[in-house]
Image (cartoon, rainbow over all chains, first blue to last red):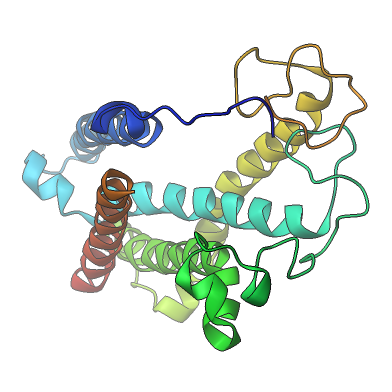
Amino acid sequence: MSQQPEQRRGGFVRDNAISLFFGAIFLAALVGQAFSGWAEYNNQQVADGLATISLASYLTSASFGVDVVENWQSEYLQFLLYIWATVWFIQHGSPESKTPGEEGPETAADQKLGSRARASSPAWAKAGGWRTRVFSNSLVLVMGSIFVLSWLAQSLTGMAAYNEQQIVQLEDPVSWSTYVMSAEFWNRTMQNWQSEFLAVGSMAILAVFLRQRGSAESKPVGEPHESTGATA
Amino acid sequence: MRSQRIVFTAYLVVIIAGLLYFTALGLGHR
């Protein structure tokens, strides 16, 4: 922690600028995906000698669904693993890492739990028992739930899209249990996972030697390469 | 914390609505 004596508060937009910015570009990209996915879907329909569909039909198609949620699951898995892995592993020199020797869940005092909580600590951090256990893992629990549910949604929409293709090709539709063991399901899954894992690993190690002046994800520009866990 | 709670809730609502919508979409096409 560095020199931030007083936390200056702005209005609603300034106080929430990161979340609002990403929320806005998420919606814009989703709209872009809807239009480009619709165009691509209809190109394929024409190539197959089938009727084109309306935008509304595309937005309720399994094909649109699987393209959205297969990306969701991999993103939530990425952050889930990053949150979990940074409890137990360190990366010497990385601003994303705790310092060597701090691996693990740490002490109640370090984590401001139970009797070591402050007056301003959240109620469930002070409560002790199951509530403190749940709250202590709430980020992983929620990100993990979103991952599992979006992967499940991928399997259902993926199966439906796959079966529509099977019918066009005059082949038998497959069951859910067959689909989740299929090459198509695992290819969609793994092609998303590999890119996330590469990006996360890159972030952890590149930030040892590289800087972005002013970024909360970077060490201060003049911070030594050696120093671990230092953010601006 | 009030305005952060609004954005926090909005994110969860969008995510849960998306998960429900796409799950229903998959189930509905069977």
